[in-house]
Length: 88
Image (tube, rainbow, N blue to C red; front, side):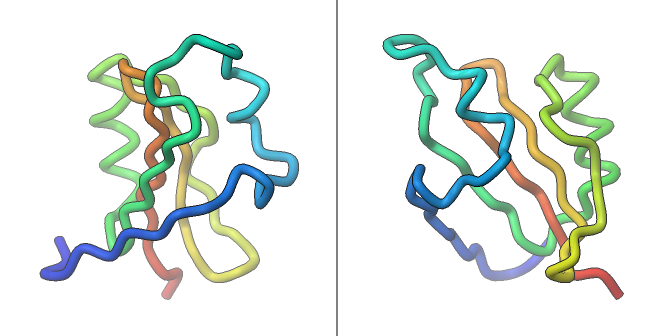
């Protein structure tokens, strides 16, 4: 794991074709709108741990055109997590 924690925040308006907004209820999920990116985390073992813990996988680990391998998931409280790492 990285020695430094970098936190990146996105406005809801930056989402294009992301499945997250379609899953949120108007008043519902406590984590609605909060998404936490975990840079320099290998998404593949993280995806396995999340699945075992019962978290909802929004998108399996995928290599993206912008150079990251990442995936999207929701934890049991509705918070979105995005572990990812630069593709080498």
